[in-house]
Image (cartoon, rainbow, N blue to C red; front, side):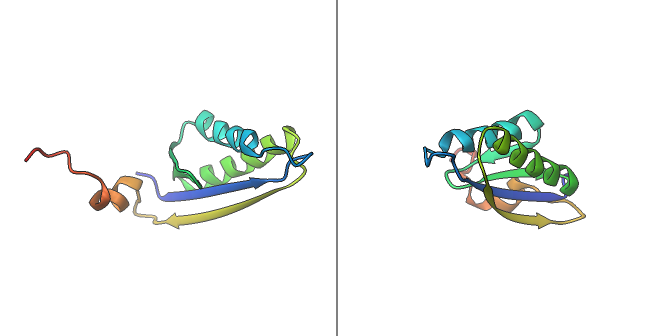
Length: 102
């Protein structure tokens, strides 16, 4: 079981003040290519895995954005770490619609 949830919102500066969405899309591609379990939300993406692995992905995200032309990036990161294990499903199960039939 994973021991860390990491949510990240990247705020890339763009070279000519153009739309930042293509840069955000590139950052999400890095997460998708990593193969870690993740959920994309409107304002952030949450990943589930091992702490070191997730921090490496954050580093790769920043590197990819610089390679794409972003002169600087701010990331807001939230980390929930539990050595005994943690999951998105367990933390949010009471808020998800029931699959049981009435």
